[in-house]
Image 1 (cartoon, rainbow, N blue to C red):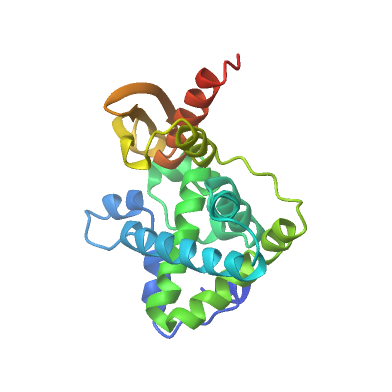
Image 2: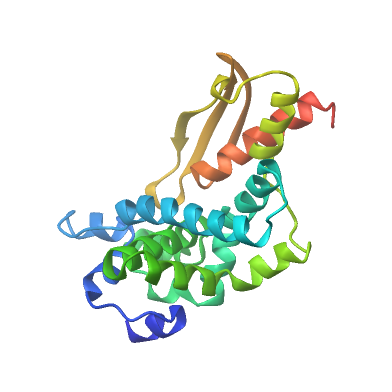
Length: 230
């Protein structure tokens, strides 16, 4: 585990937290569900990632409105951005995967890499506290944040763009829901489907290798419909 700790520039006091962060649910299943996997840490890391990036953007963009900050944060913490961070530090080589995932390229699967980044963030918080995880996150996202500050970041957050369009039409945020509509495929190659509902009416559907990507695809489909983009 020394290599990945050097790459994230953080040394764990409790290395079992890092081990859990790098353990995919498929590995746990292969072991009879007798060891912990990283989904709970992923949940925790997602929350702290949003907070840390949000705080940093608030600091470096003192004159920007909420909508701008939301769009930039969403682009920085999206799956694509997380995967880029994972590949920069070679996170895939440290993952513990089940036999099926190993055989089908799980070490390079976007959804697994993105989830693992969030899980590592959660593990660092539990091991070292907020200041430690903030330092690590800002190190990992330094180039992306500087790109955002210089106006070089490409914003592709369809959920936020759709939200802004709907607000302009007088549709409130709490009237928009992304509903899980099922999943297909084996555990090592799942495809998720999400249904976008506006005021209780189905607007569009999206699929993806993760729920987050499926939500983005559903929002993109709704945007194209409302803007008459073919």
